[in-house]
Image (cartoon, rainbow, N blue to C red; front, side):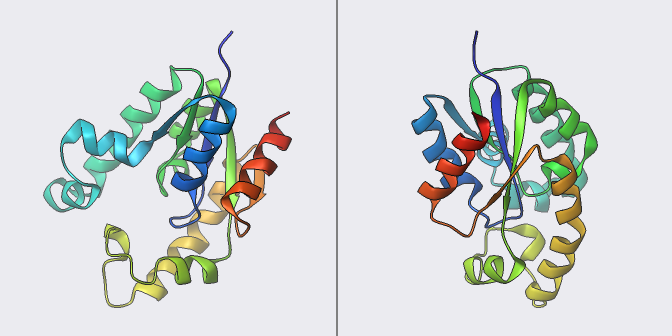
Length: 168
């Protein structure tokens, strides 16, 4: 039987894509970055989708994609930063996967995303204030969605080792 999916969640900049790619290789599973998957399907960047069609349309795409990917097995999925703040997506991924929170303090996120201009929700002059508010709102939702919580301030290799140990 194919393995359960591993769904990585956490705030933007916590390392979902980096860790996910590494983890999938170590576990012999396929890697899917949810945002990249949506970008390919729509033939637009996430920023363009937000700009052209708004956040609600993007969240609809996210729901459809979560449903679609949860029907598959043997995937390491890097969920978008907002994906698992919606219970419908949590429920979909729980059917075939283990949800892993890559936990990281907001101060570390701030440093990691200092020069990042690709995140539509943070493209504004009061970026740090908005980031902190979003983080404070999302963290409890991530924690309630997660089956496993891992300290993501470590190196990506250490984070992978912790996840693998937790899954065994």
